[in-house]
Length: 280
Image 1 (cartoon, rainbow, N blue to C red):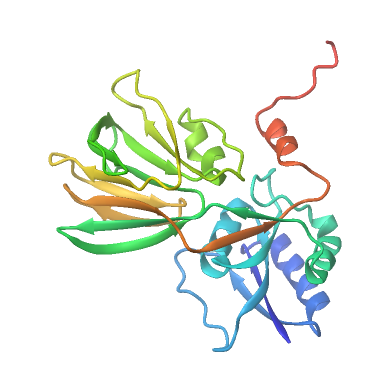
Image 2 (image 1 turned 90 degrees about the vertical axis):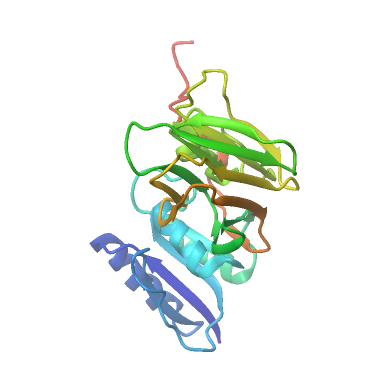
């Protein structure tokens, strides 16, 4: 019997839908449930547990947790949106049975998303490595203080940024913090990495879009203290002066089941408020 994970946020609507989903899947799958919380320790399913399908019930944050905790091996993720319109969780609860049937039969449309590994190196030793689906953000713990950062791409001479921080985003994450910071929206199927400064000191400093085969390295300035690296908005690593943050294409795979009734561009249109003006 194949394995299925139901990841859900801890509220009444999500719990009730998790109950119904589990009831509908039992007999065909061995079901394991996980309440999404980055603060909790990773759950301990049976030792031979290997999910073939993942159901995420909540919003984009729940789906990011599900992807990092369970989905990096490439099992399809059905992201059900129980809040506001989501970019990642795009399945409406009322069509979940239909989507599950197509996912189980192998006929669902699945999107492969770019995934990046982020390594933190201190004094020549890697102290942390994580995988991002959306973004890695370098920013100050103390407010209203500018930082100095050096960026090297593919081993070239360093670019120097003076800003409140720096966003390193995947195309999937282009509609998250990157968009709020003035970065471009990138179609999620493209293979690229975005580099967007946060409130740069120089107005001419803008976002850069790079191909994935160019390794990216950021060095924290010598006089810069109280800095955090935040990955996908859910995990945090304190940084020190001269720490190196290295970005690589990941060997992991994240696959999202698409909503057959909605195109990504429709979601984008609604999110950005680009409605049809019937007066035209």
